[in-house]
Image 1 (cartoon, rainbow, N blue to C red):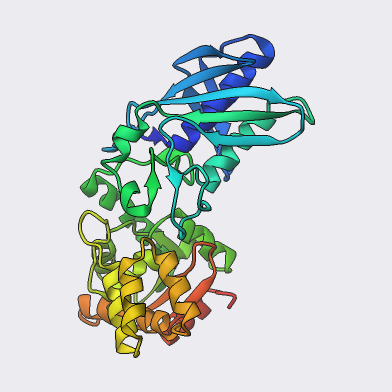
Image 2: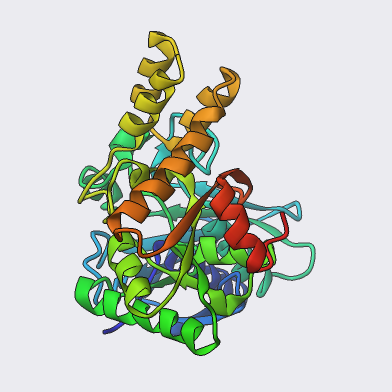
Length: 361
């Protein structure tokens, strides 16, 4: 299946194209941008346009074979040179604004996530003269309309879509094909003689595992297919699994959810609220958890109210529910991480399994 390009990579390519047009008066039909892993991504440029004191470029968002709601949108970037040496990125029409805490972007800022911001800045630095700054405005003319069909309104992002992506590349999400593509990762671990592996939702979790000293061959991405991948581990003779990833994803396992896509099930607030109540949290705290828009906001509530035991309890419960799911066929531990990659809870089984895999605790 055909891969696509994230809104972040599209914005970076549009910004680089606009800067090239402004500085050289040329209009390349294709732009190459790099992601944080150093991978080069080729992006077609749809058209160029004039702006006051600058230039603009348009990239058509290509979701590949992924059923992506942003597929086909125009991603615009306007670049105007500035007198200082700073690259300032602002959101224009159709870019959402963050209005509530708990997201990766501060309140009041345009919803352009950190990796896309890095990709935009990196792309511009490749073409701007040394010490030259600029103002780059990212906009999506139909962003406001499309955003109403996303989770943005629930997250407190108003006025448009978010510019997202951690790798610049959109992987096709045909469920059966995607599941089948993940299983060979287990086979590679088995071929290396491993009986203990790490299951993590995605690339960020894999990156965090490597940063904590665990070998790449032991780290297997499971996406949202927790139950499916646990069963495949049993089938292939794996004995121990460390569930490793952002607590906002893994908390669902503590509720007995083994397909963690938000369209299938989302019990994050309810699970944290129930566990907090079982630890004696007052009604106001439980209600605050239930009304939180993100699990990062929930984490802050638990820390402020000295209820971090709830996070540890959730990790233990996730391990227990997962072992029940495979009818005792695996020893399973769980480690919850924050958005920054810090381990915020890990049960004893997680530390035991992780220790065998080289986890630097």
